[in-house]
Length: 242
Image 1 (cartoon, rainbow, N blue to C red):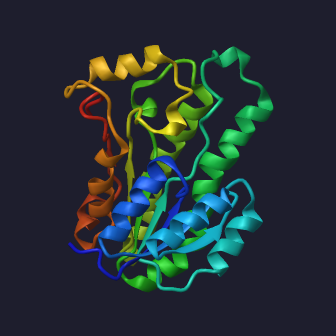
Image 2: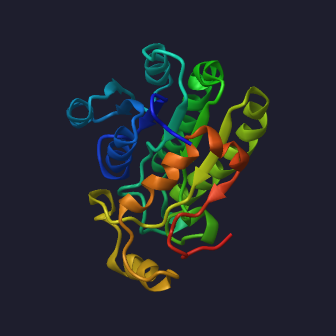
């Protein structure tokens, strides 16, 4: 059940939920490698935590391949937290422009797939690899006026199940978490009425800090979490039940 000494790669690590997860995983004794497109912030956090850092652009297959080539194996965990959301919500499906749609799919969907593909050999090498995909509960309840993001996270949920079956014979577990709206700087753009919808609709009412998410992610990266492979965990304080 321990993470001590297990090598974990975390994408989207420079800020928000990613930074919170980085601090929690470092405190749990992981050998941590952070990855982000925001290099200055990512390197500063890595230096603070005594972790490694590798730059990555999840929309660029060559960048993902370079990241994987820079990793020292084996790899015990991959947390696919990197994604884009800011600035793509608040409009109906008829008004989404094609470039925005394609960018969201390129980063959130294709980027997640390519990260798993690039890291799979090192995950297999560890003998107990774990992949945690960070999705969103928007894909569980069908959030309106956010179709590209919701669709991308729905794809991540479906990929999680297929990847669990493909990687399972090698002892690699794949799970997904589906948080609600968290209180981080990256959600400042979310309209106040959407924040209130979540805060009032949760079984445990009120705002949800990103620190809520870290203990479950940490557990999913342990050897003992293999029985949960293929599962989606809605970490939203009871806004959505599955």
